[in-house]
Length: 523
Image (cartoon, rainbow, N blue to C red):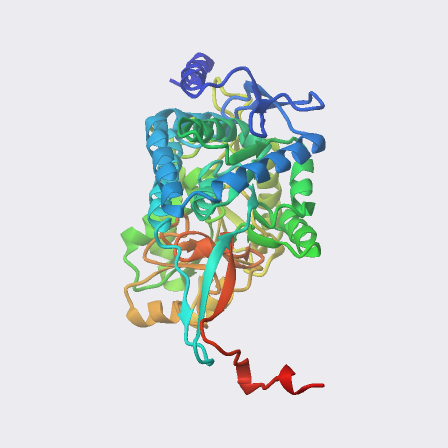
């Protein structure tokens, strides 16, 4: 395995199962269209640089029609009882199970994940379907005691209508599903603008979703607009008919989205990446800590928003922990992710490789020493792919700009501490606040990490790594990592509008706060 012929064979098999072709449409506005301006996007695999397909992209003209059609679907979908909507989402989960292997391979081909990671992402979609099915019978409101006689006071939740979801390449369908399936059971219709680096996965998923809806005699509720330069994302941010925008991507773009949506008093969910740290204390289990840090730094070639980018290590562990970590980095195989023994596949494109090289150069200029890696790899037969060696850097000051900046690549900075308060200060000194971890069997250390003076992140992990999250918990970060939550817990409330209801069932009209108002006494 690993040759261009093998990759082409995988592509043909996957395309046949998922109904993809060399030329496909990236516009679904109720039906698959070619796009008003006839523009096309060439999708390439980061594994070997080969072109996978040509995708017709959407224009602003197409987007206007798509929004109108989406609202037409909403008027029908929202009238269906929520448990019935849950039954449709259940059927979607069953259909995803049928296509898990092909979708997992497509993710591997398109964004360079291993097939195991690709299938894991599809499994996450299935899990969210199951979660959403249960949620469809638990969209609870509250009943409050009214201060007025013969009054009932309660709240319930309505769908926003049509919501927009903008996703990144690194999780080309799972993050969309966190938003889409929760939004759908509440009664919303979803418009998706995926990364152009992951257009084929979005097209395949959208096709599967709407086939299920068609089988049930229902209108399409999952709309898609692939673009090439971000113009559709800008349209979505400005669009008054999208009350909610969920955006996953860079901090800089997220700030632009937030400004545009806030200017029209819309709502946002922002997941803008992380600069995640793992603290390893002298009371840590060394085996668990080593595995947790290594996987956190290496999974998805360091291209997760939850990737471990900083190791905050007690100085007493330097001689025991660092050599083993360096050995683990050196032993990991970099290459074609379709090979069964490869853990680290390619970066998404040449720009990511350039960012990797620039960050290492900046770290060295700040006083850093390379302990492992620092190489652009050339894989025989895959010379046009984008491969780098996982890198460990020691001695860079924790407040150096390069350490404070998220680089989407497998680079790990080793930072040392003496006292736990110092570790917390190092941990919290970066602008981002997504995921965090501590490895310790000391109850006092763990509880301090979980207290208000410990981790300032949206996700806090104890004796497990930063790079991962279960769908049952709400996912999201603080500070520059954005705001709002996706997926589990009560994150569903972001996709609905709360309505407070007052019912007077008595013969009089008492007013709140004891106010009196009697029009019969007025002349």
